Length: 125
Image (cartoon, rainbow, N blue to C red; front, side):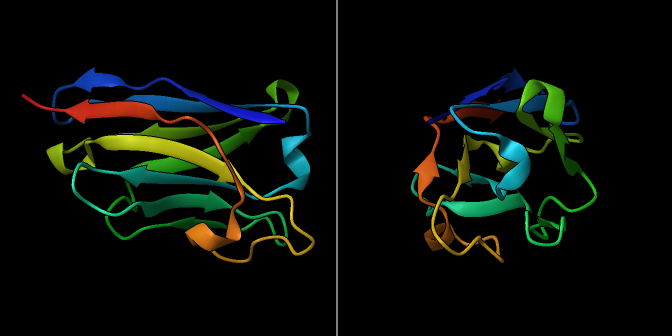
């Protein structure tokens, strides 16, 4: 079982990036998938989640209207489309899922037990 993030990079403010979270060893359709990020010197924070219980999505206030989470069942991949990027979006982005007996119902770290290695996003002029 593995999650692998890709798509990070360095971009100027206002530009876009699309992050990918590819799963192996399990079918993503049946599990909650979350994106978190951690900036230097800061705690890891939730960015967006796609829940399996009711197919709802969550976005943090700081990215709402700019980021979109989506699933591609055929590719067993979850994407995070990031538009209108800002310098404060600079962070390592992680995707996560959970295989516990109770599926996550929120977008909080303790609900997720399996994490990818992260991908760096840098927004700078």
